Amino acid sequence: MRHNRIKNQQNFIFETVFSTQEKLDFIQQVIDAEYFVRLFFIATDSYKINEERIKIRMLKGGHTVPAEKIKSRYSKSIDNCSKVINLVDRAYIYDNSENSELLFRTVKNNGKHGMRFYKGHNSWAWGIHNTAFDNILNQVAG
Image 1 (cartoon, rainbow, N blue to C red):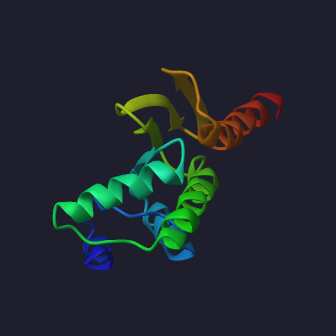
Image 2 (image 1 turned 90 degrees about the horizontal axis):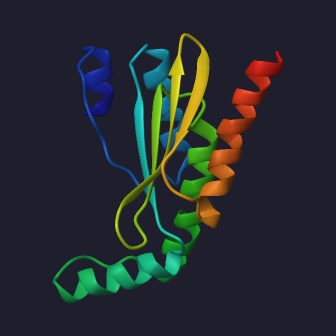
């Protein structure tokens, strides 16, 4: 369905765990099709928080996810966010460990990148932050 939306130049939104190369390739396809891309990335301090939330969801009748998948997807999704943060037009990075809080956002405008901070960073967010910040430093130096 997403590929048809691109083919027909229609706007769309999609949600993903963001833990596979296929998702990175799709983001690149959307960028190549000249869409304005906003990335809303939401993570927690630990995959263990996600495990506990899935247990609660199961008790309420929801589906389960194996613990090993939760752990591997957690780190892969953070790595993938780092890979695309400088490609998208806007990125909003949220911590959903307790209350959903916007940590920082990035902006790309006419090939230039900027960043705005809202909250202190958690350990998982530093890698994403550093990737974005390095790009800003490189554009200033270059």
